[in-house]
Length: 183
Image 1 (tube, rainbow, N blue to C red):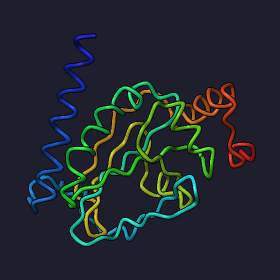
Image 2 (image 1 turned 45 degrees about the horizontal axis):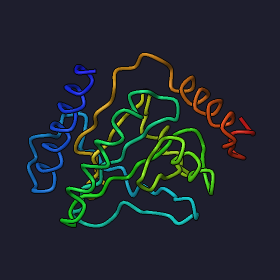
Image 3 (image 1 turned 60 degrees about the vertical axis):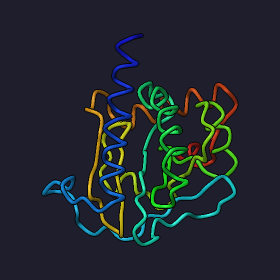
Image 4 (image 1 turned 45 degrees about the vertical axis):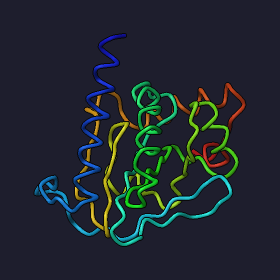
């Protein structure tokens, strides 16, 4: 358990450093493959209300995760603490996006099952695939329509396998998405 706490603390400190650097304009974090314009990302909450990541100067941390992904669940409390610490300053916002086609009120059930206290968003525009997310959790920092930094967990299991595992787990708990029944 001590090892997990150390990993969580390193992750939290690393993310905090990136947030601070991006919020205050430090360009050092962008790698050569990052920084390309991607346009405006949009996600939807349980009420179907869209959030557009287009506020000038705002640093968005977009966390793509899957129900059934153990590392995703383990870091969620740290991400919530990070959001509580930095969102009040008005220059940072955490956007937690569950993969797997969840939408509408099923997002509330997914959040409950994951133990999340923050708003969980669905991905109706399929940014998960458009940004080539191939492992969970994967985080993108987005500012002014560009991705200055990306952090992905090393891939151990195919993304579709995790999504299927999350659906199976959610369905066992009574949480089913109409989008999942089409897959």
